[in-house]
Image (cartoon, rainbow, N blue to C red; front, top):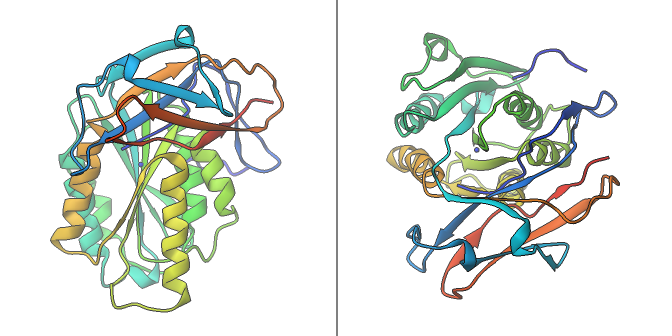
Length: 298
């Protein structure tokens, strides 16, 4: 296993031991608590902040979690740790300055208790900035030149490993990229599973120009959408400029308007199987977004 260890909503966080499997580089988790970060919006897209614990019902593999198994419930009180992944591959040459500005906008949105780290990825994944509550990018970020291939999947795996060491309950991986993966050793499914294992929500911002057409763009968008959907995050399509910067501001805002619910799973089997999750609300006029599931311990 390589020794260099580099996303409003969902996720498995654990008060347990996290083990990195050497055979496939995927994070394995022995779970005591499942923690869901949940975003709730109304029909106009506004965040809903006045819900109570009794308004939520959680289902694991179709079976409702008994209220007595709910360990905690809160609204965006806990701090979060985020990893920002900047695509610095060759296709980003004309867009990287915009990407850098967007990352700064995201850092500006951090609350005093929140922290973020920054990584760049092209043919390799490299740490640009350690976790900190700082609002400025490290000087190294201004020397980056876009080049090489795209190792997005590997970057997500590295981000998950980094987040595994963080004590914060809420974790996010924020991706800014304009293209599909072209060079990773890890598959897209492995990247998703790594993020889910540490409870990280993925927010994916697609920087592809709107005029770009063809299968490459469609595949790129599909991959980014899948990362966001399965981890309970959000996919944002934007051509850049003010819309791009606003997208990153919106992500930071969403992370500050999440419900965090933890519960003890009734399924104690250590079979490593996928467990589907669903959250329902007492109000049918609201939209809820959270992760789709998690893989049980082995």
